[in-house]
Length: 301
Ligand code: AMP
Image (cartoon, rainbow, N blue to C red; front, side):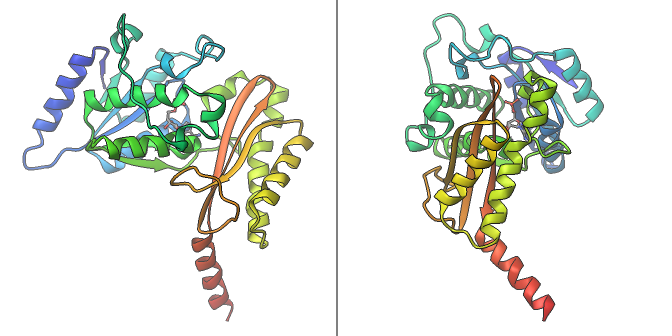
């Protein structure tokens, strides 16, 4: 696994990979991360490996996406352990770990924004500059690497949908792939921030996943009113002493609120377990459910 820290060298290396396509087409799959790698990140790398001949992973804790009062300084950084994991996975062609001065040199002033409701609601409401930081860093990484595909996790659904829109609208060649959330045995979505939790908090954190599961069962039993489902999720969270920042039912393509659970509906939530902010979501696809139900019915007949 090659390890590069300079943008110019990364660009040259990726360019050479692409030029070397020859008879056998070589494609580049790209996985952007902030490190402290866990099985969620590794599942994206595996997906990139399955669908491409070459895999590039970046690790960069992006200061532009943290507000002044957020956890930039506490964010876990362990490059040595990350490199060990990546080497063991035997899937990564190149690791790119630029420094802060490489990505944002003194006097840096160029930013990329998706300017519609999508970036203002949900996490965008409490973190107003967050998505501007995310779209800027990913646009920069795409410009340097120019991959064929970029792999993102559904765990950060709003971020993935915003980046998908940005990549399409700014004519990046990369196809954006959104991969399923990887969870612990108790359902808690893996996250680099789970390490902040005390053992007691770690025990109550799966309440978020459990509440989303309750929502799914309500819909399965016929509930279609988004507010009733949201109310029940909030009630479940409260029961477990988990404080909700937001719980919303939205269209997964636009992130706009829905009143009825119909077609595809994403239910997203952000909660605080102690001081740690955790997010999770589920996408309910009524058409798929109806199809499965119909199939089961036919089987029963
Ligand atoms: P991060 O390092 O937290 O910025 O995440 C890098 C990428 O990994 C993002 O696309 C995340 O959505 C994705 N990711 C983080 N946690 C998970 C998880 N539990 N399952 C799947 N993907 C994840």
